[in-house]
Image 1 (cartoon, helix red, strand yellow):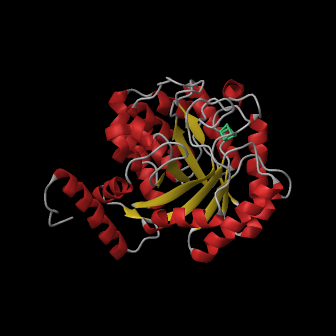
Image 2 (spheres, rainbow, N blue to C red; image 1 turned 90 degrees about the vertical axis):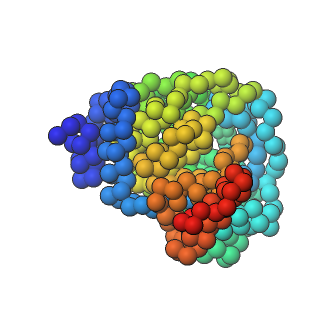
Length: 353
Ligand code: SF4
């Protein structure tokens, strides 16, 4: 049996791989890539079948952040030219999420720039969350508001939030090179506070910031210690006007290896394809969905993603289904998505679409 078969069997049996094994995954040769994808896909299929969970992101407050995270277009002094606005009103947010939910999003992620929420911010977030839960009781709401203080996670949970996102982003040994205004431990503490209040923890990483394979493995194991329910894997978007501008360390093959490493460390947790998937996976995006079981639909915080109809068509072409969406709705969404593509190509809809 090959080392990759061993790895997928161990992963299915929920045995955590060694750090050396994960570094081997991250650094394996491209000639092993398809075997690696097949091996990670076996784990994904075992725990998630052919389901894809869709998440829809709304940036409720953008820019003007006093923190200096090097990867972020909203950081202090950023010249990235992103939209800057204070909190959106609750009505506006409820309207913004509607197209995402109609397209099958099972989770709405509410993201606010800044170090952490003020008491007023929490009141605003609470109003938005309560209204969302009233309108869409079956849709999960995840808040991402930065570093939390005592009692704040409880307030969000009381308002009806299901989850809190706070990424570790990189390894403890690399943290100082990407941010000087808060620490790795600050991030760990916030994830712990969210969990202690009963919120589901969503915490992941960003790759492509100059970290080594060992540091990617370290990040995955640091996340594993926190036991998050969902793990977004972000691929650096090197925004102009940020310190990481022009940094292009990744290629589609490397991205697949990173995603596979995340899957082996988190066999039964939601592994989410997050920012940068279009730019870095390019034509290999469908292979990525054989490893990840979740993705963002449409746009990211400060950049545009591919059209939602292209995402739905990709999911249908893979023979996958959208988690939580009934078959008839998915069939009609799929037909619409394919029709949009065909119209673009100037042809009629194929009979099997
Ligand atoms: S990642 Fe968050 S805390 Fe860091 S600069 Fe961006 S908005 Fe601010």
